[in-house]
Amino acid sequence: MENEKQVAPKGKFPYRLGFGILFGLLGWLVPYLGVNSTLLPAKIQQIAPNEKVQIVALLATIAMIVATIANIIEGALSDRTVSRWGKRNPWIFLGMLSTLICFYFLTKVTTVPGIIINWSLFQVALNMMVAPLVAFIADKAPKKYRGSISAFYGVGMNIGTPVGTMIASHYITNVNSGIYIFMVFEIIFTIIGLLLVGDGSNKGERVPKLHGSELVEAFSFPIHGDVRDFYLAVVGKLLFISAQFIITGYQLYIFTDYMKLSSASATSNLSIMSLILLVAGVSFAVIGGPLADKFHSLKLLVALSTVAMGIGVAIPAIDPAPWTMFVYAGLSGAAMGMYNSVDQALNVTVLPNPNSAAKDLGIVNLANSLGQVFGPIMASMVIGFSGYRMIFPMAGVMCLVGAGMILMIKKVH
Image 1 (cartoon, one colour):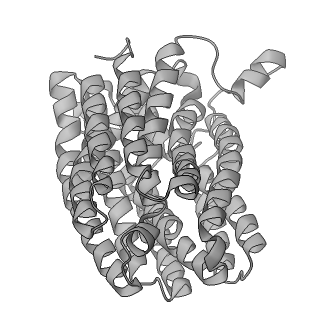
Image 2 (cartoon, rainbow, N blue to C red):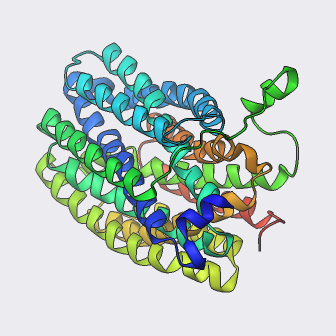
């Protein structure tokens, strides 16, 4: 409880924690999504235009494997780190430096194997930041404010996706300049986030030595405690994110190949779509957390958001025209806003062991990484088999199944 007092003295709302998590999240999310969803596909299109869909899927597969291993190991190591800078800060700072190095070398590579190696190393670096950052919610947020603090994370998630795309869309024909812009952005926002959270020294904290089965459990998926709800939350999140990234992973190609637009027109429509996502997402993210705290309705809000996302992602199947992507942006933006604002509060509530918060939250949030990979892989298979139109109803069905998983959770109302 000591950390809670540091963040929210005398029961005051922990604004510094909330804004610290918001800035820290934007520090890695905006650059990552901008590059992953737009600049990386643009670079691949320049290098290998005839194999671009298959290469994006291959990259996603390799990234999924690397991210899975890195997330568990780095989250577990963060839980057990003792230093004068705390147990989360060293990992987040090291992750920032490592991702910047990967971004720099991405501007230099000119071959598909080079991109694959670089992006694999980037996944290792990125996950040094992801799991430790979200663990601040479990470490420091007082229980009564958990939904509202989660809303800061949700606002960041809903700013990150469209802002990353909006920035990147202006650099489709000048990929390296876009990457450099994102590098500067990452440095500024990550450092602001760490300073706001102010996670001080945890020297003197006792970390028990691990032997035998305890060692294995510290670096593996949880199998003890109340894990049923935990894994329902993981699978529900995986399906939600996968459906989102079926669209996001191929949004540039949806405009150019499915809707037959020129690169200039695609850039313009990407910007409009991203603006709609931003406005809808932030609007609903702001109200989601406080609603959850007031009505204690985490599970219902997450499930309804997943259904709304399912409707949104299915809309572009109606007509290969930009207006359907704008409707998708409005519905899915609102869904992501509500979902992201309460999702982390739900995740913290279903943790089987609070002493392994970063590792277990890393596994829950691994659904983010895996979904960003699994979605494009599924989309690639469907595009190759029947074209773009069928990826939209497929994404809708995935969301409906995900909503069912969330409603099966018993520990959360």
